[in-house]
Amino acid sequence: MRILTIVKQVPDSNATIKVLAEGKGIDFAGLKLVADPFDEFGIELAVQLREKRSDVSEIVALTLGGEKAGETLRIALAMGADVGVHICDPKLETKDELFNAAVIAEAMKKDAKGFDLILCGKHNIDLDAGAVGPAVAEFLDLPHVGAVTGLDVSADGKHFTARRRIEGAEEVVECDLPALLTIEKGLVEPRYPSLPNLMKAKKKPVTLLTAGDLPGVAEYAETTKFVSISAPPPKPECKFIEGEPPQMAKELVRLLRDEAKVL
Image 1 (cartoon, rainbow, N blue to C red):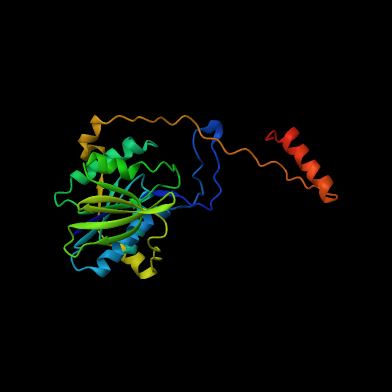
Image 2: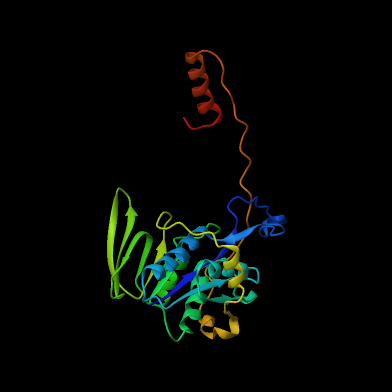
């Protein structure tokens, strides 16, 4: 069984994001970038499957992004992936998740061995669209199960049972491999890569792909254009109401009606 994990580099969720002038983008100067937390679930699941099974022959980590995205790829390799694929070309950098999925799918088609299981996070915390995983499956004509919270792969490695949360219940899905799964928080807890493994990751092979290596991408067009980005408005100052409970209640109703305009 060969497993592919898709990983993306994103700003740290605890970082302070600064918007460039005229909303042209965000300021990456000094901004901490990390592997997307949801994609890390996919990496960890792949490694755990190999630890539990004898038929997992290789784990491949793939990322799409600029040169710095290679740092995120090394994290995946330090966590346990065997080899990496880095799609790095300014021509392919876009915020269009459907186009990104087309690029990733074309890169996967170049792998003659093929993959039995493709894993990624249910969404990325930067764009938060959740389109990459399902779109990759569509481009490759593969079944897809989203937001998986539990997974059992059959002993023969030919099919699996997945569990996912839906409103008010849990859904159980049975499916044949190959397939693509997007992973929800809670299925696994990503391991912290040790220093020795980080050092070993530097020696693991990484294949670099550019637009010239993926001629099939030319048939796809970007469907989403970046217009601008803006910081959220500052939160209004908190108001404290003092007095006796009856008077406080009346004042609260007045504020909600006259100022907040929610009544």
